[in-house]
Image 1 (cartoon, rainbow, N blue to C red):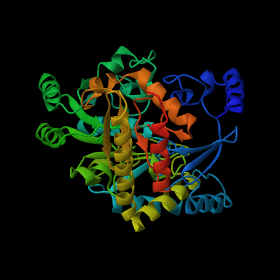
Image 2 (image 1 turned 180 degrees about the vertical axis):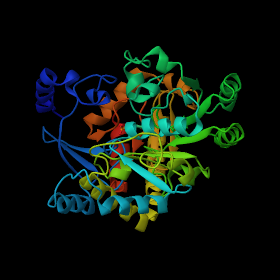
Image 3 (image 1 turned 60 degrees about the vertical axis):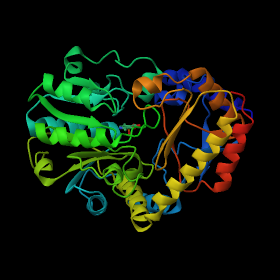
Image 4 (image 1 turned 90 degrees about the horizontal axis):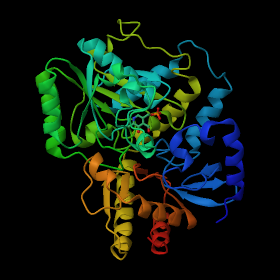
Length: 426
Ligand SMILES: Cc1ncc(COP(=O)(O)O)c(C=O)c1O
């Protein structure tokens, strides 16, 4: 496949945009080569500026669970846009989306809309601190919660890809309040809690991690975390920006059978428009301005176009819950297919999967945390990524990212993907 026009557009973009992109992982730094410029997309396919058609396993990094340019979503946005794009005043559709989201997700009474997953996590942590009156937070190495200062401490995906887990610009003062634990290791959390008794506001976690590849929490770990937080008066914060409305109507809380105290959303809840949200029981949410003293605001929060996209998306997911099962089956089928081909190649590999999230790691050991994920062979990953691309399959351009399947992917697309892998030299 040729990517001449993409390369030319990238060269032009680099003159005016740092690194030529508006979010680092798009730049292909981890895999080398120039990024592909997309022109349009429909269903499971991307159409790039050179006229190539690619099977998409990213779905805009998760939001497009029902495929690209999904008609009910597109129509809802078009109709809404005709009435004006932003008012900075309350609109009925905000309540409609809030009501629907609250009805789908366990253990939440109220939800506040923001513009991104970053904002959701940042605001949720402020709320947790305001509610508990404590300053410190625990996060897990390799988990990514957006790019706000408190989280850029051993964050996964983009931050790891670029080798700057502690970004310049994050002050020591901020960093000292973020304590780092090891995913799937409850003892690492217990030790931090014991050493910082009574000082921890919240433990924030990706309940199924997607930013060090897909990593599934063990039962003991996630249950242990819930128990520990309850015992110690610490709020358990599930960052469901990836998993929310993807692993089921009720996200990871429902899929894992664990109630969190605060839940963050992004991606699917906006149907492909910029929406994030955080939610909790009334007792916690009542601390948020204007009801309570914890400040949080946004000019474009609850934007009508974004709400229309989110409402159309969640309405469909709510009325067709079988879609989650269908996606999980397709993902299992992909898993089997990739596994069968990789077995015949002379490279160690591991495949992790949960629901419609899956990732391939070129390593001997099980991938259960950031350290084991980082052992993956990036040279093999590069060959895999570029080889698949050469055969029309667009995978995440970093070994630290999960794939996100969308429901427009057919079994024939998955067969084509598996056949592509047969032709790739690793
Ligand atoms: C788990 C998780 N939390 C938060 C974020 C940040 O969301 P956004 O990129 O919308 O700011 C991401 C982004 O990928 C994420 O995966």
